[in-house]
Image (tube, rainbow, N blue to C red):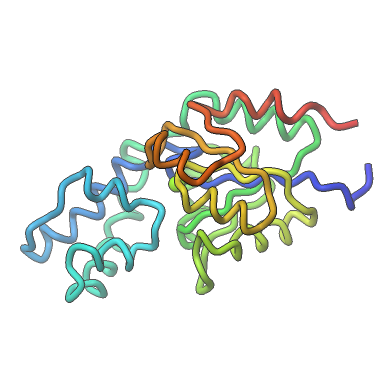
Length: 214
Ligand SMILES: [Mg+2]
């Protein structure tokens, strides 16, 4: 097998591989209670997940962003696995793709250290070749985190898989085919507006799209 052949598959983490939104929302709202501020609704927060923390807090409390981020970054690492778990079939799908000769990486807006801890806690470290966080460079929809993930894999990419239009746009910007799942943050209609190549309720279709390599 030539190493020049593209065989990289990139996955967003939160809302794509792992049903982590309830823990993220709980930690996000914790800061408002901590500071005695009026909190936004779950749905208002959920709609913004996938964006950097600073951008999310700016929407609701622009004058308190540094403090809210600090409180979140203390609360979330102690509470991130209370309710989070991989979506149904994720581990099986990743294992099958890996056995078929593809190289698999996470490309997330989470910070790298937190992303690696989270993947480990969810029991997915051994089925992924790399976990790439966003540490001090432009976040999705910029393609930077995707390029870094592919550099780490040592291959070029085939697919970007994600649950938001940010993932789809980042994949398109990096020249990848894009696969959107409807079980995460953005609705089917919202995802369709970004014109992904695939729009699916789960990851099952990936196994049809990615046959075993020779
Ligand atoms: Mg996501």
